Length: 396
Image 1 (cartoon, helix red, strand yellow):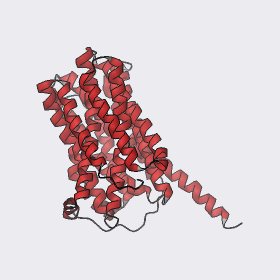
Image 2: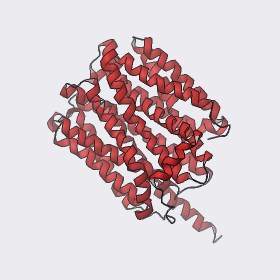
Image 3: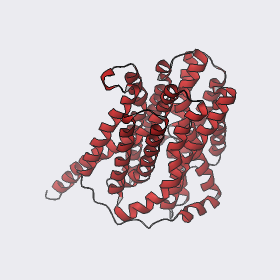
Image 4: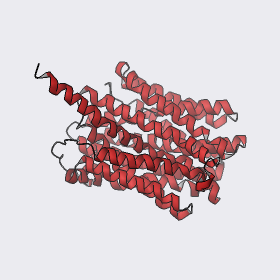
């Protein structure tokens, strides 16, 4: 009887520790406000698509710079302190827009948001391994992605709520989104800071060259490009969905913003469903089904000019793209079991695709309209279709 009480206490303690960690996953989703945010900044400042798409590109540029150094930082100060640092940077990025809406201020805000998210993406998942392990780890990380997706889903609706001048006394309009997320971010800092988490000894530090050399392995390179395409499609849809409705149906941004919400709604549903589907369906088959959904969606976005078919296409992209990252990431880790730290850093660097795709889409849409932006995303989908053939026959 004496041995049971510590087990119960440990379970309660683990649950209490997991709550603030899930708050952090919610904060991780703040980065997706860049899609709807860049559309409102474009409207406020009269920017071209190329100028406006600099914002999401800038956010994801920092993943190229900070992912590997963050791994080194974790080995020096620990995972929890690194996550706390990322939350502080994120909170600052959300406070900056309260002081104005100029192009320079928004560039600073989105840059800090990208830096904070790069540090958080690299450090939060390893922190979870200090609380759960074995079979529970995969399901916990998947649930964390589901919590993250909730923040992504509600961001457009908070922005539309603010744009409707629900809070005119603040004079913030759609930027009330930053106020709401900043409050949650500060609560996350307090909750995690007050939560004791025992960490094992630091992993071996990884250098930049150790990560880059792994690209010499064909399958690792395929996975790296796959991550870039996944994030490019994600950020591209986030940014372009309202513009498609505005161009083809002449809707105002306040109404077109719901397109982003539909995308994130089905991405959220996909994250939640994927945690269960992958228990029974092999990764290769589920990946193939997901990519085929996006193939049909791209075809619809090329030709459809009525509301419901466009919504259906965005729903297909959202559900189809929701589990691509987890499958590609796990495939990369399983291909190099003795170099997980290096592979993890390299895959996070692949989020740099969120910089390249929006830039290309912005220039393409300036020249050919939103059909040009859809064409750029379609290139990423075609690559993922090719990658499907290379997936190993194992469960992710």
